[in-house]
Length: 229
Image 1 (cartoon, rainbow, N blue to C red):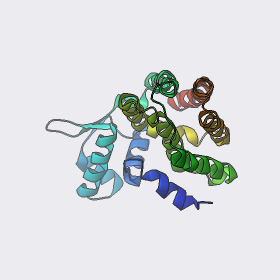
Image 2 (image 1 turned 60 degrees about the vertical axis):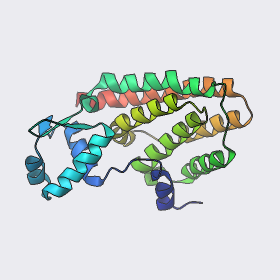
Image 3 (image 1 turned 180 degrees about the vertical axis):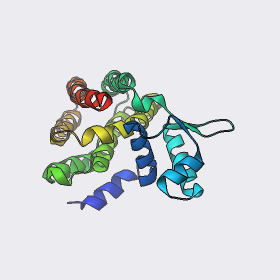
């Protein structure tokens, strides 16, 4: 079995790097403790780090689509980060796109990749709930979903999903900490792998739609509580 760090290191190769400072800044904005438009000097004073560290964090956030550098002054946070509606739209977009990818005519599974996906999901099920970090679960989930969509060989479907995942990352981290358990998600991922490996792509697509809808309903309830606080 992978150790926790080994699993995270394996998955993170698939993701763009976001450091602790960037997540802290974005999470503070989500909580309402940072202004929508803010300068590097203000951020440097708030977090007690030099301007270079702030600039590096902001550039990584810009690459994710979380912030936009303004002409002449400061940075602006993306409204997506604090919108219940756009978070819901992201899930409804995924319900449209991901099952369609499984029905693409050129869909072909990668057995080596599927073995890796299966091991990651199985190892997650063997962890204690309290040991499963937000980072681990988000990366394991996005790696799974992007991988099965990538097997469609449709670059437009994959690129669209990757962009949606970058934008929802911060909300997912905040929602995860309030979930009862992430393990039903991993169990359902394994069922999808079973169906795809048997060549039952239509059944896999139907099950994936239900999987995403279940996750949408669960997470929107949590997200609504976050936005209402």
